Amino acid sequence: MSPQLIEHFSNPRNVGELPAPAITVEVTNPICGDILRLSALIEAGTVVKTGFKVRGCTASIASGSALTELISGRALAALNTLKAADIDEAVGGLSNESKHAAALCYDAVRALLAKFPV
Image 1 (cartoon, one colour):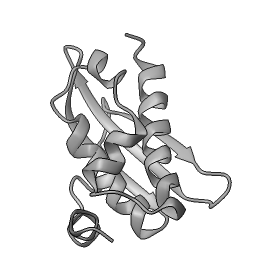
Image 2 (cartoon, rainbow, N blue to C red):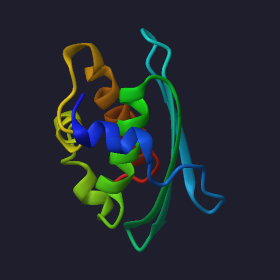
Image 3 (spheres, helix red, strand yellow):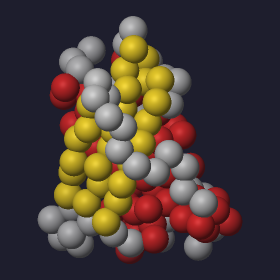
Image 4 (cartoon, rainbow, N blue to C red):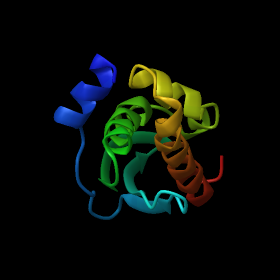
């Protein structure tokens, strides 16, 4: 495990759900059972605040934390370019067995964008 992954797992950022008017989406990995709830407050087309909850493995918790940092302050249109590899990189690289964590975060961003077509 990378130092970045351990840091995000040990000290996760932006934990919790945001109240309305923030939008919350939930995605599940049907293979491993991990669940990610991502909340985002959108103002003028920009993500101004984020929160997350994960029921899952170390990699999923760390990736959820990194995801909130990656999308905070970004325009919704910019989220279209976000890839699972960006999340993987943000936690210092995931093992092959843990790549599902980045995919779960990617799915959450897609679900969020589905609520705000850009």
